[in-house]
Amino acid sequence: MMRLHDLSVTQQIMLIALAPLACLTIAFSALHLVYASQSSAHAAHGRALAMASFLAPAAEYGVFSRDQNHLEALLQTAMMQEGVIAVAILDETGQTIAARGLPVDPVLSTAPDEPMGAHVLSRGGGRLTVASRIMSPSFGDGPHAATSLSARARPLGWVYLVMDTRPAQPVALAAGLEIGLLSLAVLAVIGALTYRLARPIGAPLARIASAVNRIAAGRHDVTVPAAEGARELQALADGFNTMARALDSAQQSLDSKIDQATAQLNFLALHDPLTGVLNRRAFERELEKAVAASRRVADHATLCFVDLDYFKRINDNCGHCTGDVALKTIATLIANCVRAEDLIFRIGGDEFAIILKSCSPDDARRIADGIRETISRHRFEHQAQHYPIGASIGLVRIDNPDSTVDGLLRAADAACYSAKQSGRNCVVEHLDT
Image 1 (spheres, one colour):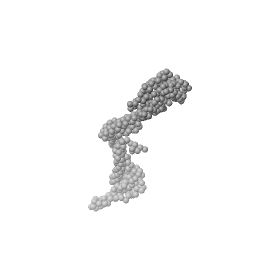
Image 2: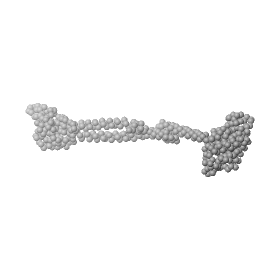
Image 3: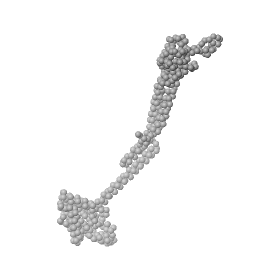
Image 4: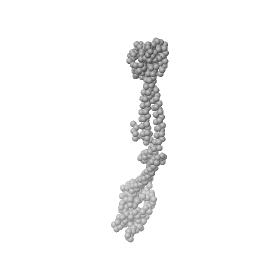
């Protein structure tokens, strides 16, 4: 069942405008129908009394002279009148002299105790029965006979007339139908005018409501066309568009920040936040890839462990903040020594790892020596003091199909430890993996 708030603004305005008018129209049509029915019934009542009053004196001669032809002609004329369904003429004793139409009710055959003139005997069932006395003057002797004529009139009989009042009902119904059709036409015209007046209000509001629903569904590039008509609706449309643009801009800014934050989180998940090189998590994943590649396509690589020498002095003498600066510098120096396809990792406090991809043993040794030499030549300066830094590097080839990640890590760590034991700042290659 549709409720009022389910209707659009245009429909509600039309309902507010047309509902009272429709109620008034229905009430007016009903009152008019009742009035028309009563008027038709009253008219039929008056016609019946008038006809009975006319027939009574007209039948006087026929009753007095017992002229049957005269009475039959009179009744024939009466039956030709609209609504007459029965007419009868009775003598003074109540015997039927002439009749047309329905038989005379025996109950009505007795003389009604009424004065002269037509009177209603019964009504109901769509019928009206009236009776009127047939009076004949009695001419007496004497000089005052003429003036006392009506006083000495005597009854000759009665005229009974039965009228059908039902034909008045179709007339009333026709009148009611006419009023109803006219009312519907008026309602249609008023409804069209109301729609034309309500449409400029309802249509912009409907567009704004639709735009709000689209925004709620996740769309943000939504605007509504400029409203025509009332200044309030124009201001509402302009305000909505301003709000929608602001919301779209805020959403784009938020999306950009989310993308940046997501990218930063993804970066931090695999990179060292201090030096910017890859972290230990990325190192383990890339080492597994390098081992798998060496088994599948013989894409041999070299793993390098770089353990900085004398770095503890910087932390102890200059502080960890200065040590962080030194680590950033070391990461940059290493990056300048390797190729673009090689990967650099910080796997501990002062420990780095490098995966040299598709690199021959000679090239790997040359790159490792270059890293060692570059770091050793660098003199880290702090507060007018120079702090030398060295690099002990252990190498292990990733070219044995039986190699495992753990085995490579142990071999590289052992080679790096050998470099430390050999006097530091040197490169040791582990040949047996």
